[in-house]
Image (cartoon, rainbow, N blue to C red):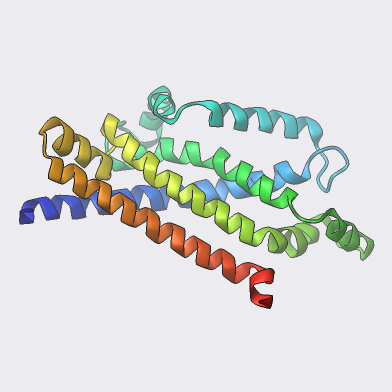
Length: 221
């Protein structure tokens, strides 16, 4: 492999990490609170708002039901409005973020709902406010599951970031398509796949270790 190819792979890897980091951070920052609200806003729950819950649930389901590659194309006008262009790594962050928010919301909602309702009732009996119950009971108890869910989100984002390469999104996917497919350079395609696998393994291993650290059952053993 030539030095030029190594440089191209390195630059594309940095682009991919940039896209995943920014879209992941924004998606988690917006999706996690939304997930907590979805988990606590049904009728009779901490922040009871059943109609808002249903409306947000419909929006989340609609976004999650849309195949990512179609979502990328469908929101091109919005992407241009936000970034001024629909091509490149910065533009790719917009659809990646839009796809991440509902994904994170459902994962966080699912993790929160796994918490023993008895803990919530006990906290209520002790006079804790709804906000205190969320931050001192629900989130700490669901933390290992949330970490695993966020790990899955980052792994999925790495895959999505490669997918946006098909529409000029930059990064490793773009490199693999332009050189590996269009110029028929199988060694470049193989290198791109290997880098993606390494990135996914690093993220998954780190997430597993972090979740194990937060898991009370693991600490007791």
